[in-house]
Image (tube, rainbow, N blue to C red; front, side, top):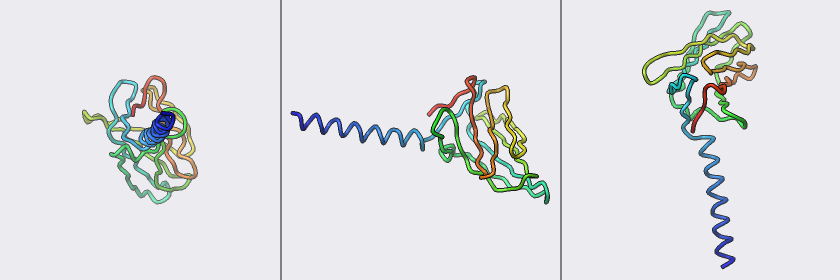
Length: 137
C-alpha cells in the first residue's frame, strides 16, 4: 500500500515538471488591453548608418521564451549598433496592426497595455504586458 502511494506521488511529480515545461515552451495567446489576441509579431531592424532593413516575423508565438516572472516574453532579434532602430508590429486576427518604433536602449510604456522593454546590448526584445493587458497559456 505504501509503495503504491509512493509511486503515485512520484508520478505526480513527473507530471508536474512536464506541465511546467509546457507552460514555458507552449503556445501563448497574447492579449492587449483591448482584449485583442496578438497572433503575430513582426520585428523590422533598420541600420541607422547604412539604411538597410531586415525583418523577422514571429508568427509562431511558441518561439517566444517565457521569462521567470510574470507575463514577460523574450525573443532574440538581429544585432545592430547604437544608431539602429526597430519597428515592432503586433498583428491581430482581424488584420489590425499595432506598430511601434523602438530606438535601442530606450524604455517605453504604451497606453494599450503593451510594454516593450529595452532592446538591450545582447539584442533580446523583452515584451511585457501591463495589468491592463494579459498573457494566457
